[in-house]
Image 1 (tube, rainbow, N blue to C red):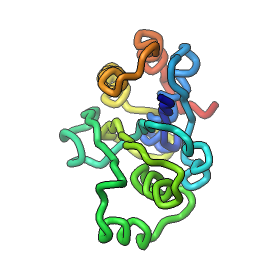
Image 2 (image 1 turned 180 degrees about the vertical axis):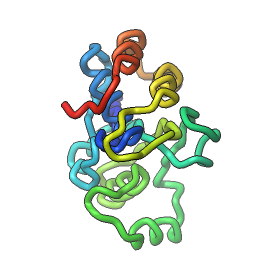
Image 3 (image 1 turned 45 degrees about the vertical axis):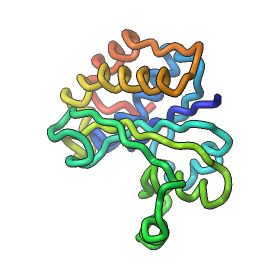
Image 4 (image 1 turned 90 degrees about the vertical axis):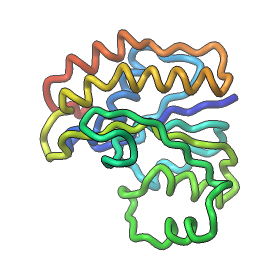
Length: 184
């Protein structure tokens, strides 16, 4: 089974960059058994990188109400394009987007429609505290890292992925050491 973990977000906008940072730290700390991709804020530009996997797990910030309320709340959402109805596809393909403002659900729907992806995808989402330009990742979101990694671990185990490593302590330590905007 080929699994891809995709971190999303623009690091210049506070908590929005969290998923991309988490992907960087997973790589730096030696995560193994699955591929990691820095999706940053590439939007449609990452479609080619997503094709060919059996499972895709996005790590991103999500709006309040999609998971528990409050900054730093974490939840998991399933994206199964085979269960989407015609009305849902029509909405996704008709809404105004640009290269950078597409959701993981939109990306998966496009891949599915093109015959490039037939699996179920997931979003491990964190509710942001601030999306303000020039701000670092907030404390509530940084503190959510342990829960995010636990959800990732549980999901990979449930899916039957064997022989993988999530270096939780290393990733959490790197996330807690962030004190300002991280652009590298």
